[in-house]
Length: 442
Image (cartoon, rainbow, N blue to C red; front, top):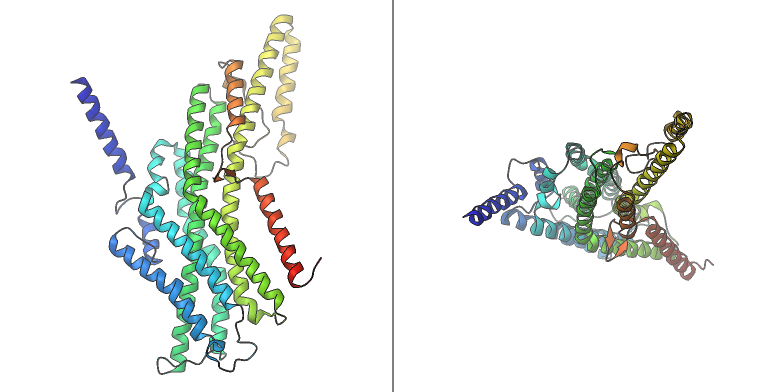
């Protein structure tokens, strides 16, 4: 009878947890879902999923192909002046469509497999502190604003170029019976296609940044266990294992997207560099669209790499914090032992005063900047935080942190600052090699 009651209670708890992870019309994601529907990337049911895939195919494949092969004045054999020819249009269209296709497929797989709430870790917020919940909600509410901060300036530049190109006689296709109306419709379709592809790519990048912000908030909250009175090694270890598990989940979900985005964008930039260095006629009229496309792709890639390296840095800063905690505890224990052995109260007070001033003096706070937080700071840990933990336990915990580095990984490779230096070195070598093959630089 007792076993049956326990099993029933576990079943009820599992049902509550599952219902917590399910999405419904009136949860905290309702505004975000409206934005997804407006952007035609919502796939909450079969009807919206079919509409989303249809819009994706039209704006990512059909419109760019028609723009390149039909709308462009050079694509029909017409006489095209030097300002309105688009020799780099193929590279720009393929680059943007390829990255948009990768982003859309990954986003569709994320939503289909995990659901929006579970993918954004909203089902785990009930286990977090109030500080983490408020911080993550604030980051989530400003995520769409951040998305348009990146998209709208590039869209304004692209819109200005397209409007100039069509109004100054770039094409003459009266497929609607009137040249002005035809050019207006064609320009609107091209701008919608460009806006859609850019938004889809930046949306996945911003969502990755949002998830990384949650883990950074959790790491900063985790740093408080080193200054709490009732902290013990077991609770610290359990919380760190939980954070490591979530970082592994994020790495597993995003590793293909980050890897292929890096490959696609690198190939796009090298193709752009190759075609521009082999063509002597390079000006703003020809390369303006290609430049806007390159800036957009590189901005999205920087969001991914910066978010990944930042959370990796914060996760590895826990090792420094634990080592500092251990050192402060060891110093304090030796000081107390020496004080008790020599029984010199005056010397004890002097040592304690020196220890306090050098650790938290006012001169140490002058130039710390905005980078210091609970994980990265130069302050000593108060003595009450480790008074009940033995040396062996503290040493074991520090050894565990040193040998179990946490962070964002791509198939086992840690995305940290050293990885960024390696990527930059490889990219620079390839650029110099390509320039040597095209313009003869040595």
